[in-house]
Image 1 (cartoon, one colour):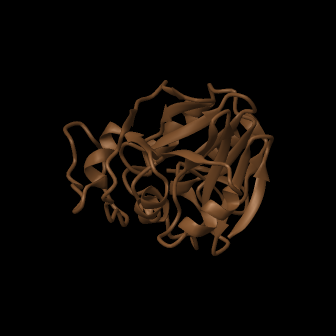
Image 2: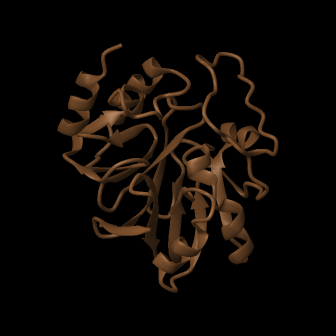
Length: 226
């Protein structure tokens, strides 16, 4: 697993050159944002280099973001697992992928479910240490992103990707398979919403960290043709 520093407080952990999760340093240890594919737990613990991982925050329930949750929970006593309330049914085994009233699009992508219960329900505006939770639907219902308010890093999950430049995942290049699974229009609306936040860089679920702040996001929005 490749380890790349992110600003002052983060580490990007990349598996197969393509799948990212992140360790974010807090006063009490690390927060892990997403848990990559199954079988990543030992590499994640090695990257933490003895600093305790206190909690996992999930952006969404797809397999490349929750794969190692159960294995990490088995190895780390007292581990906190945080996710949005909307995500909880999709994390069940088997997952409940039914739509709720008023939701647009549908629910696609591989959501295998996990056995570890969510112990921290996260809503928009909640602060978990240095991280501000932002509701970012579009790729999938209940999706969250997390903004590190110390340095302006947005841990974007699959709302955004960096594939030959920053892009909204639903408008990624033709060769990228993981496009928005619920609503491309909603994904674009979410990106427009993100313009109001003091973001300096984007740490996506796929691709390298992208600098550029608001101008980079504005360009990604301009490139998103419905």
